[in-house]
Image (tube, rainbow, N blue to C red; front, side):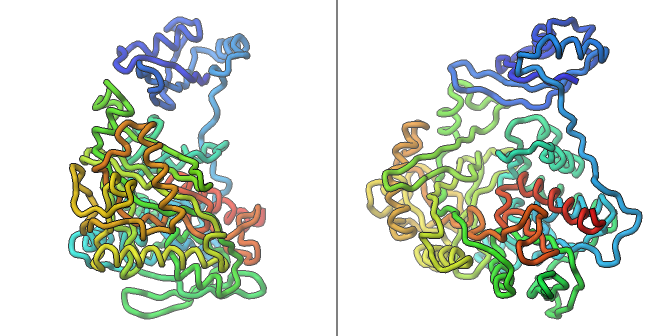
Length: 540
């Protein structure tokens, strides 16, 4: 197979244009091509004329012709041998070990760690504090519609993890020489995700579709001998001589507790398992504070973003709702950037603790809601919240509690018009943009919602963003706060063997341990950690 990249065609090209471009690029005839498949499709909107950009894998009629062409085009970086992207299990057991590996958490990282361990024959046990995804969805809507928070079943906790109530984005900037991201995508398609996620450059599934996909993946794991225990929270870790030996688990359904023998434990906790982080710290597991970001959600009419980004092609069905990625380095030394941009989506209530307000963004597969939203966040470091590994959590909680009060102490979010925010005056009523956050938005002055350095940096950044995307700093765009859970505020550091630096058998993984940021990278990390567990269990 030969891989061709940077094949560019007009947006509305003919059915045969791509195959003709392949023939002309390789200087061959149609008879020389046995088949071809699209590996990736993106678009280039940097010039007036928008172009589709393809990467294709071409199978030729003979290996001899392939060798001749590769030799002929050795200096062309866009004509190369197609890489082998087929995932191979490192081991396959006939019988599971007596003490089975345990995965804590059933978000993207935990799902893929469990899936790989199950495929390898280890029959993992999954401990998930939240509920199954459909029950969890009902509980989440309870906060959005009725202001009733379930602290163990919400946007953060439950089957599918925080990524279930997001845009379902499946792209990442991680280095992936083994194409493990392809394995993640293939498993999603196998579980019912649309096949187009394998070829579009910025694939997404959307919340409603993710629900069924997650359910199907759960059933696959169970069919291979895995066990998934919902409404079970790990409340203690038993560590002897620097090695994990067991867990104490609270059964939230009936209030009982029990002990589980375990010497290989994957920590796929997610970034909001604050009580579990505290218990790990109490038990001496090594961790350290790390930078993260805080800010607000911003909402614009999706049509404004489409026109600014796609021009005359706005609304084209092949392009869908436009997204953006922005960054500004402020005069006070702070970086301000867009985070988790959700085209045609909604801002959601994402707290997991009572009397706190947290915002996040989500989209359905169709991305056809009226507003675009994104986090506009400011980078902070441990120097901003001194006090050890858990100090970042205290910092987050302070901001979230303050936002709860600013919003009226009823889970409404404090909000402000962008024009008023830049001018430094309180907003008293909405303009042309209706915020999507439920239970609701209380208009106020967000200057007190974040530290002064963050407010100053954001006031400078928004007009700068308006120069990059026309209308971004429009007066009536809406800010809602606060966005605090951009990533974990700590790192549970691991070594080259993927194990905790000072607790053998404990495998920190995914977003909670700060080894991933998003569904795809969390899934990839879950695969790599599962492989490390397998190697250790069989003594390789």
